[in-house]
Image 1 (cartoon, each protein chain N blue to C red):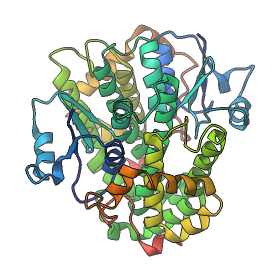
Image 2: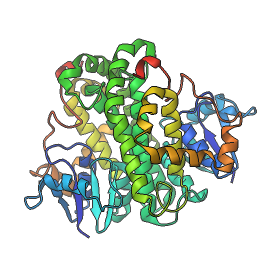
Image 3: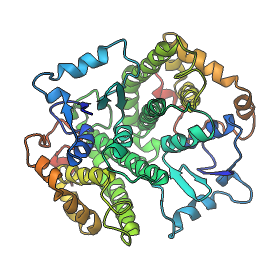
Image 4: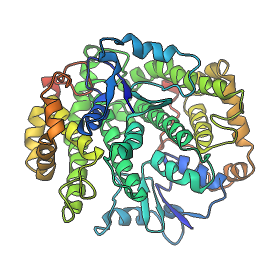
Length: 239
Length: 239
């Protein structure tokens, strides 16, 4: 099966959570908008295909043969078993998905920090509100989410060094990406907060060392963080 | 199986999407915080239970025997087949879940309208920002989401009068709730927008007539909309 990932070609964004799973598993896939023979227009063309049964509301979406699946966490729910990035047990799969949805909420709140009014305006047009939003995020929600996942790692620590079960799952890959993004966006806040969340840092390092993932991260396929994605570094928001 | 729903007792909120599924299916369940023998303290006690394997980040969560599941869309993914509110086909289930996650994004954006800065402050402390947020929401995102679901209903209209497949699913119940909430929060905007989204209105009416659901909606179990939930009516935001 050759998977097709449809996502914006110039940012990590939500698509990166899917890219990490595909790369870590060594899956055969095309990142359509970045493929020389397809390009960004292919993502828009896809949206305009009227005959299409299950239209996504927004990218990312994954094409697997005739199946099209959107919503990042849903794509990972689909890919998890197929890429062997999740155990077979059904209840464990619901648990993993629950954690992935909590990560998705966290991602949305990170986006809200630089776009508190609307995604339709540039950051520069809502800077004042963003500054206020960032203060509460860094003081309140950021430590709350970090504390939650630190606790999850602690609870699972008797059994393993991962978020759940005994092996790395797509949830670990996503938590790695979360930490990478937060370090880029809020380096000051994260330097502080990582001291009191040691298990998350250890997990991040362990994931970064995985063979295929390390090769991906060092390759040109890994788009650098930038000021267009979800994780953005505005020093005035990192106080 | 007697299900236990853990959610705040005084609001519809995200828990209502689960309540509607349980009620429509005639399931045996306890709304724990509203149960005279348990009460709101039971929700907090649950969080403090340290021995607990899969702690939720936030309510709502569902207890089904020894299984505990959180995240609204995840709960419905779990309940759907068990309550016969979703067809058996696996790909259809991913499609339904994708739509449910899109509804969840929509719900989060509705919440952001009255809390653009942070959920930690009252609406009154972020009124100015909320007003600006509401203008963009009503002009941009609200019609975009309505248009998307109108289009989904149109695409499925050859086969049936529901969002997917030939029978009502939990997604139809959730879309009903979305429209009810939006009518409460933004009556002016919705009066306008419903004219150009007739299929959504027809679906809303069809769901409201379902026997068990109609009985629930007329009962004291249905908490009235109020200014503490996700859907709030602030006339200054409905322009």
